[in-house]
Structure formats: structure tokens, C-alpha cells
Image 1: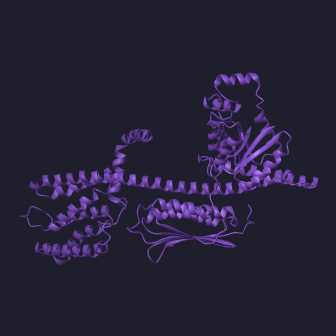
Image 2: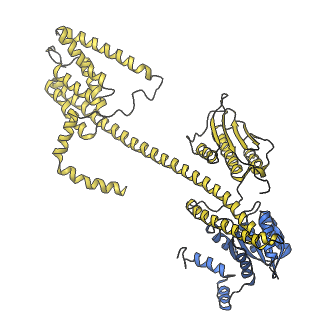
Image 3: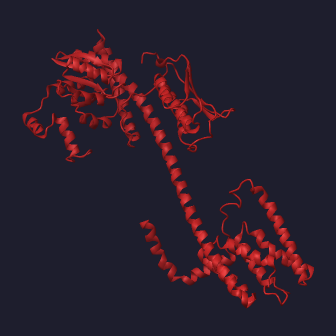
Length: 423
Length: 158
């Protein structure tokens, strides 16, 4: 905020020093510059009506064209001129939805030109369609251009009014013009600030999403690190203490054990350096052992107590034979799957399936259709990304998607080489 | 004889350290425990001089068990030596705050482990240090480190 204020304070004198240049630039833009970009197609808020917008609009324009043609003919214009004037009357309306500034330029031209042969006894020089159409065009364009251009638009629009309108009618027309300009300016400023807010919101959401992904990735790396470091530490302990646990270990073997322990320590030192990077975010110390397949029962039970109607169908899985990283990934995938089901399909029945064969572990979390639409949609989220990263980091596959019956399923296949079992 | 209790959820660590420490003439391994709750119960029953305490354990983690053991005013309080698998930073402060006398990486060389147990047990605190500690209401030098950190006397990395 402070920086913003400082910035505008700096830029103000520049504007004041060159008011004429600014005004001339705005005039140039008003007459020749590019049109205001279309932020949103008309009727975008009512998608069901959108397909009819163009045909209905064209029919209305055609009707106006014919009315104008009739009036102009009544005023005694030859047919080609009447057709030309009618075309000039409706052309701005055709341009209005996409090129409001162009529509306004055409309107001014029409206001200046299409006044031939107006009956002398009439108080308005223009046909009713042209007069009303002009009001519509001005009303739209004032809400689309920035302030310097707006001032020019209003100023230039007063030219045909002052020169051609009957003196009795000038004041009301000018008042109308002024009112339109003020309302248009307000609308535009409102839109601008809303758009800025929306842009900022989107930016911060994207930033948040990015951070969530990074955090999840860090968590995965850290957990994998912990699993490996755990094993590595055991190797060190086992090698270091082997000469004490075993009797009659020959001296060369003892030396060998010492070397193994030293290597394991070196590896751990390297890994700790890595962990220092990963833990740099304040994540706090983990004091519980890493969960694995053996903890699935407890998790499902906890989810059930929390009100999630979940059933666990775990085949004969020997936890000890599944490597810890695979068990951990399976646990986390089920955890995330349950959380997703609770978030997006409240009340739906959830089924967790775990199947292991000697070389791969299959995990599947599926829920029946939600009772009442998806609740609290958290966007694409990093849940699925995290699950996929866990699966692929182990060389496995991950799929997620809606089911034919309206439910949803996430499934992962995690390959592994069975461990000896006594780890 | 220094009586030692080993608390770790890994059987390999319990057996390994048990064998290693038992091989020292001045150390006696009086028991082991597979989680924090067991460790607290065993310590109260066996009255060890030193408890080797793993941090990550099921049921009750090592930090909590340490707090329980050392918060117990009535019983004879053992010295607690914290064992960690992972980097020290996360646990050191927490463990020392909980009253642990020291900490050690699990993969430390055997000699270091044995030495650490002896140091913790023997309390080779010089008299004048002991007097300062008494004045500050601290139990040992590890707690003095904690106090130094807490009062801003020293900052990490200095």
C-alpha cells in the first residue's frame, strides 16, 4: 500500500507537466486507437440463453433497419440514400458487442450525416432508431473506456448535439449525456477494481496450490528418506554390534563388520545433509514410527468412528514381506483416498481394497455416488498429485477417476521385491 | 556397576546394544523395553542408572517417556540418554528440555556409545560447576545448555 502511494505520488507530477500531451494521446486513442478488449461475452452469465443471443440480436437489427428505411423514405430520401442511412443507423449496433469504441465512432458519423431532409417542423434531426441507438451506444462505450478517453467521447458527442439538436432539447440531451458518463465511469471503476481483486485472488490461489504441491513433495521425500535412513541405521547397529552378539568371530570378519558400519554411517551422514534441506521448512519432529500396511486397520477404524461408512477388504498381506516404502505409500494413498471421499462425497459408502501378490501390492479406494452432490470442492488439489507421485516414485502406476455408477475410485499398483520378512 | 535399561522398538537394536554394553565389565544391562510405556514401567521396576531411550516408538514416544520418567519426583530418577536415528537438531532441544542428560545417534561407533553411558552415569561434574547448577536450580550441564538457549545467552550457530 505504501509503495503504491509512493508510486502514484511520483507519477502525478509527470502527468501534470504534460497535460496537453496526455489529452492529445487520449484524443488520438479516442479517434484511432484500439478498442477496449471484451472481458466477457454478452450473456455469459446465462449460458442457456447464449445460443439465441446472436440470432435474436440480428433480427432486432434487421427490424430497426426496416423501420429506419421506412422513416427515411417517408422523409423523401431516394431509396439508395435511405438504404445507406438505415445501414449507418444499425451498423453501430452490430459493432457494439465487440467493438464499442468503433460503434461510437460510427454513431457520431451517423449523427452528423444522417440528418438530410429531416422535416423542418420536427424537433429532432434524427430518426427515432438512430437517436435511441445512439443513446445505447454511448451508454455502453462510457463504461468501457478509461477516463481521458471518456472525456473525449463525451466532448465529441456533444458536437452533433449542439449543432443539430433544436435549442429547446439541448439541455435535456446534455444532461442525459452527463449522467451516462458519470454512471459509466462508476461502472468501469467498479469493474476494474473487481477484476484486480479477482486477478489477485487467482494469483494467490495458484501460489497456494504451488506451495501445497511443493510441501507434499517435500513430505514424500522426507518420508522416503526416513524409511531408508531407518534401515541404514539398523545396518550400522547390526554391523557394529555383531562382534558382541556373535561368538568366535574371526578378526578379519570383525574388521569387515567395522567397515560395513563405517560405510553405513557415511551413507547416513550424506542422507542427513539431504534431510537438512528437506526439513528446512518447519515441519516439526516426527516421533511416531512411519505407518505401514499393519496400521491400515487402525486408520480405517478411526475413519469409521469419524462417521465415514468405510469397509476394509485386505487380502492376506504379510506386512513383513512388503518393503517399508511400499507399505508407507499404500498407507498414505489410502489415507488420502479416504480424506478425498469424505471431502467430495459426504455420506457415500467407501470401500478400501488391498491385494498383495509376491511382487506387487494393489491398493484401491472407491466410493459410491455422493448423497448430495460434491461438497466443498477443493479444486484439483494436491491429493491426487501426491498419490500419483508416491506411486510413480516406487515405479508403480496410479489411476483416479469417476466410476460409471457416479462414484469415484483411486487405485495404485505398487511393484516390489519381497523382503526376507525378519526386517 | 552401572545398570542400563534399553528402550527401542527395534529388536535388533535392543539385542545389539544389549550385547555391546553387557560386554563391558562395568556395565550391566538390567532389561529392555519395546515402547515408551514399557520403558517407564521397566525403569520404575528395575531402577536403572541409565536409560537408553529411542525417540520414535509406538504407544508412547521416547520424549514423552523421558518426561514421565524424570517428572516423577518420588522415585529414584535415572539418567536418560536419547537415541535417534535421524538428524539431531529436531530432538536435541526437545529431549534436553524433557530432562535428558544427553543424546546419541544410533549409528554412533560402539566406543562412543559405551563412553556416553559411562559419562552420563558417572556424572563427572566438577564441584564448582555443580555449585552453579545448584544455584540455578538445574540438574546438570545439559540443562544449563537449555537455560543458556532459553535466556538468549547463546544462539544456535554461534
